Amino acid sequence: MTRLLRVAAVQVGRVDRSTPRSQVLARLISLLEQAARQQVKLAVFPETTFTTFFPRYWIEDDTEVASFFEKEPASGIADCAAVKPFFDKAKDLGVDVAIGYGEETPEGTRYNTASYVSNGQTVSKYRKIHLPGTFEPLRFLSSLTETHPTYYISGTFEPFSKEPGVTNQLEKKYFQPGNLGFKAFRAPSLRATCDGDKSPIVGQLICNDRRWAEGWRVYGLQGVEIMCIGYNTTAWAPQLWGIDPDLMTREAAYADAIFHHKLVCQAHAYTNSTFLITSARCGVDDGVHPLISGSMIVDPEGHIVAENKTEEDEVVVAEIDLDACQQGKNKTFAFAKHRRPEHYSAICDRAGVVEPEEP
Ligand code: CDT
Image 1: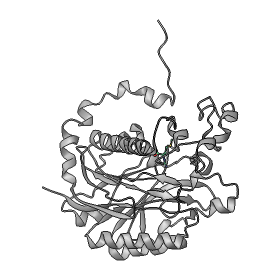
Image 2: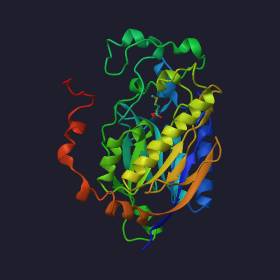
Image 3: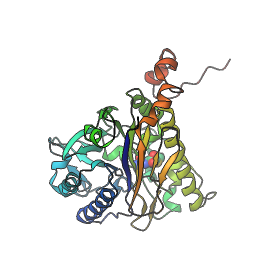
Image 4: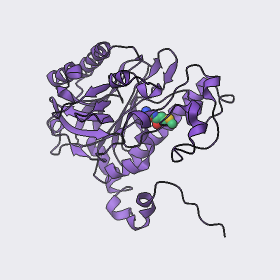
């Protein structure tokens, strides 16, 4: 039996700090229409899709910070006035969407969130758990190593002196860590369109989460078949990646960032026997902040079956057969037969490294 489904990784190009939401929405709606014309039933969009990737900026004015968040009503993001036209269009076209955005709850708590929305209803919501970066701008790093020892490597960095368009990564400042866990869910709307008797099992992660095996495995243990992951990955930020800017060109840094992106995506899709749809916000924001592309669809054997060709808005489409997940789930990664959780306790017991004693 085959369970065929047409899916898309929707890549979104340059969005500046000053780009109005209305302009972004018009582009997203056009991308939805392009996907629907290709009979796509599930379209995955990037992280913080409706705005630029604002955690790169040190912003003191909370009115500006707030402008990057959607005030999400209890009924879900599809009812949020500022972005409703996008979800109305997806509903009209019969396309399920997984999309990332800055969420502000009715109580005022802010998260880096992705919602899976079908027919105008939120089916599942994920809040980013691994928030990378710092609480304070990197130029203050050395003075903060004592107050925030968990997050800083000691030593001094002087990135501002080398790069005028320096990129911060202030997600710890702007977002609370996600509190919804790694919850897989069924997508019943896709059951009718893929030729099978079971609804696909779907999971969501956001950007930096894709580098951590832990979240993937929690989804793998729920039988996930389609992972949806949007991201904003800085293409040139030696102060973040720990690479000496004097030894590395921008081209080499970009290639390395793409290499690591593909390495983790393909490996984790393979070891959890799942398809992956992963979508970039890319381009050079404000003309000075480069983000990698690399939008792609990966199969459960870890192969890339479709990928982006540009650094701009683009719909990357593939027809996938969900039954291809069964080979890995039943053989190499038949978890119930081969896993040994009695030896994995350190993964849950601690966050940091405890080295063995010297003999
Ligand atoms: N958005 C996001 O999570 N970006 C991170 C950058 C890491 S910088 C240390 C990423 O993992 O791509």
